[in-house]
Amino acid sequence: MKIAIDCDDAAVSLKAVIVEHLKRTGRDITDLNYSAGKTNPLYPEIGYNLAKKIQNGTYDRGILICGTGLGMAMIANKVEGVYAGVCHDCFSAERLKKSNDANVLTMGERVIGPELSKMIVDAWLNSEFSGGGSTEKVEQMRQLEKESFRII
Ligand code: RB5
Image (tube, rainbow, N blue to C red; front, side, top):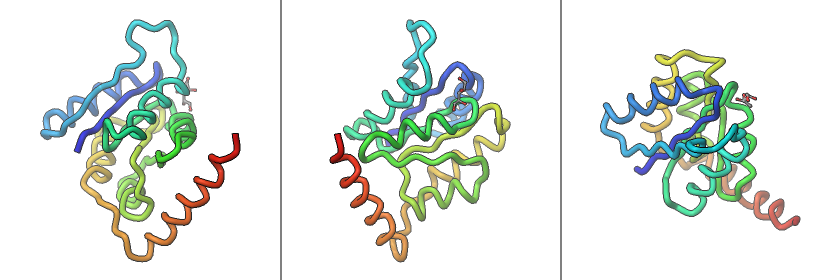
């Protein structure tokens, strides 16, 4: 599983913690570091950059961190084929994959601490889509997404 991660200026510390944790646990993690060499990039362009790389299949899953996780989830969900959710608890992180089949997880450095963040990331990465009763719901979401993205 190829994983990409990135953050805005509000989440530099938490991103470093998660990168270190994922490397230590043997994950294939790439820090996109979109902000390097740029003057004050904002979360929409940072999140969009990662989401496009999920969309084109360069990475299987992405982790985006900002102050709250909210803005990153909102921009990632603007990219067709990308499904992002904010999680600040392990139950939601597990459900985000098992029930919703999300390929992007977002978190907020101003909301949670490093230890819980690591557990949340692990809960999400260790989960797979369950199918079953969730299949119809996720399929409906993809259908509505097609309808929505046709409006240009
Ligand atoms: C800070 O720029 C803050 O707006 C951002 O990190 C994020 O929380 C947005 O949702």
